[in-house]
Length: 227
Image 1: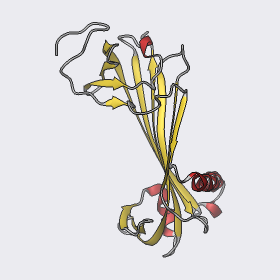
Image 2: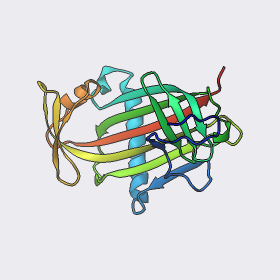
Image 3: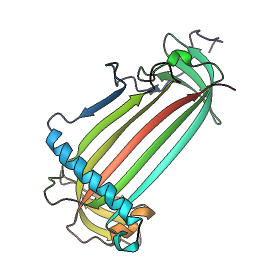
Image 4: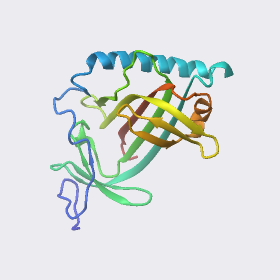
């Protein structure tokens, strides 16, 4: 790779992209939903809200500890901007273990404010929550995609994520292996590993229980100016 200064092209490095395909409307936020599932999404959103309330109650005492459960994994990575190509919106970021060339998508607003020496923080979060499903929920998977950008004039940044909800049928739990057998809405049967935070919930289920599963994955990016 030839040397590049501020604003010069950067060549010869493979590059992952951050959000090239979302939010080209110019709005500060974006959302995409199943075009045929608005009513189902509203109903599922209400169920997800009920799940959130149940999770908050479960922290208040042992009586509700097996009615719902949640686990959350958060990974944060930081790096320093070493090179910038303003025209192609590519930045070379040096992390603690490797250097990567990223292509920054248009939803990361105020890219022109990024300077060599700035610190970039990328935070990835995955949340899995489970609770008993509403009897009226048909159970098919639904996906909602969301995101937002920093206001014009502020430091560059963006958040993007998706929430998937579906209803699975409980077929059994193996205490020794910490695995559960479930049937998906399309009839496929799977054996899944059960995280420690969800094991009390799994032990309390009986064959045939319908379980609402909510999976949220989100990525946030922020830039801190060099000292």
